[in-house]
Image (tube, rainbow, N blue to C red; front, side, top):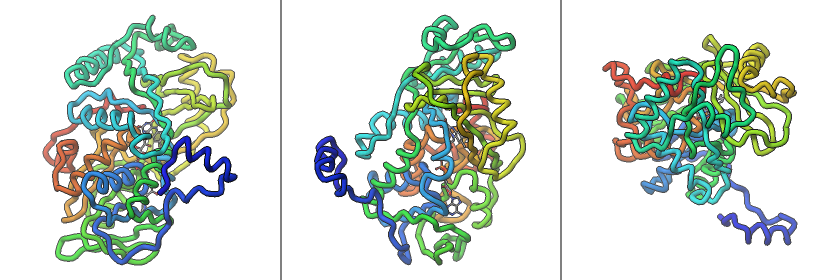
Length: 414
Ligand SMILES: Cc1cc2nc3c(=O)[nH]c(=O)nc-3n(C[C@H](O)[C@H](O)[C@H](O)COP(=O)(O)OP(=O)(O)OC[C@H]3O[C@@H](n4cnc5c(N)ncnc54)[C@H](O)[C@@H]3O)c2cc1C
């Protein structure tokens, strides 16, 4: 694969841009792979990438029923942060955040990581106490965050209204190296690097069954025929319950639609990410100038990958109190994705009850930020049978009552 560089852009400019190679191949499926990953979202692709890069396992297929990055990875609002409460969460999210810092260089693909800073507003006394506690926990975990005053919030976000009638801003949890990245580019960058290592990314191929012999996985049935494997990774987010059902086990997850919307583009007015969890809304400004706005999940389980009018209205109405200027914006478009939510708001990463099957799901409303850390740990788990990064997140924690409660950090927004 030819490397992307300033020199390559200049060379191609002289060549009328006719010499660029396809970023990834579209091969026919082989009869058998060492590892099959179901789901070409960010987590599936990152897993494949680190299997190759860290463990030299490249006889890998990533099987995707739609197009790569077309699930939640291409539908999210791209917030990256690692200010979680529990040690196990802080470790995996901070690993991910630090990998984002160098991802463009590592993948030779510009993922537009922008560490512009993230504020989680405290708008009730309860939130003040909750976020102060998180800031103390983060200090012990080596994650750089601080609890800041309303005056400092105003300094960072001049367009904010501190004295909302229902929920005045009482402070905020600030992570200066949190931010955003281009979501599609993350999927594309990993896909290109995987393809370069000889892995097969097989799009428009739905897994319809999981084949087992003597309690061990031996392959999958797909819309393009059966494919054998020694190990199987299920990384299908909102479809996790459905795909686990094919292998004969159940997961403690609920699938719900999570929605977002963007405004018309305007001049730069906010250069960080602001999350207002009490009113269920958060906002950042894209490089194109659009205000990217996310809300909460639907109040009922569903597989509806689209937006709804009442959600847009509810989210914008809530945010107007804190950001009165958005009342004058026109909304351009809205959409939804199906997220997989666990009871303790932490992911499930571990061995499945069937030998050879590994499961990575339950990232709920906030898994984009975790993609590189999750891929790193899950690849280690699949290659070696154990990863310190993922050890706490196994399915057995629900039997043992060993929850990793992140409802303050992840309950509503991202
Ligand atoms: C509106 C919205 C906003 C969000 N905002 C943020 C945010 O700001 N920050 C953040 O960190 N997270 C956010 N998230 C969450 C984040 O997007 C997800 O946690 C993350 O993208 C999950 O990635 P994934 O690779 O696990 O899943 P996905 O990207 O959904 O990939 C799973 C893939 O599996 C495929 N698949 C499913 N079933 C099959 C099958 N049977 N056969 C083959 N393929 C199959 C699907 O087609 C899909 O492409 C948001 C989500 C939404 C919907």
